[in-house]
Length: 322
Image (cartoon, rainbow, N blue to C red; front, side):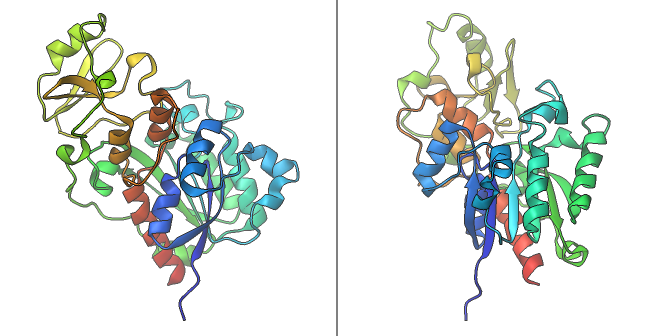
């Protein structure tokens, strides 16, 4: 008799990076939540359902009834901006973002799933002289969980040519099960830049002389076709490793941070599809018609790297089933 699939609850679901990864590892998604309307539109297009209510409303206004009473794993890439060096670093005091982790803890206490996966920026570990991280450990312990944490780079653990370091916190109700869980080992990078780039790119992604402020800087700096570049407000950064710099949520805002390449037609920014490939999304993943590229870049930059989540989910499943 085939074993029933382990059940996943996907919080701060974004465009489904965690869902795709866990389902590839044999899980079944039984509930998803994300309150951003643009994100929810993309999620529904690809998966059919998502609860668009803000998390604290789900918990405190009787909506906890919508969260299944029984599931096995909770995954939550809770908002990273309050803990990022690129933000104001207000941490838990950033109401409506930084404090949302406490909503996750409330669900853990109420539903008691066997395992939890949390993802955030690597600087979470050192935020506020490590007091933030210690608070997270304490909250999870108070909810009945023992945890492990590692900073993993998608470049080395997800087989995508993107240098993306994130902290992954894995916790289990059973300390014995936690001992059976291991973070994945480093693997060689097999997917390279040529496999990411599209062959036919619309003209709107190319920079021209009309881009008077940025084009002269790009023309002087972006010379090689085998490198990713990035415009960082006042200068152009070349990534000499051959990998793409971290995809960020504010890519394209004011022209900043979006990765740039040179091809046979000229100098251009990456397309949303190329960015999705750098996050390991399948080609079947669909973008909502009519959404501006700025929204698509933000959604992709906020996502988890799918192949890395697959490897984490597989190891969580092994630990649970052993």
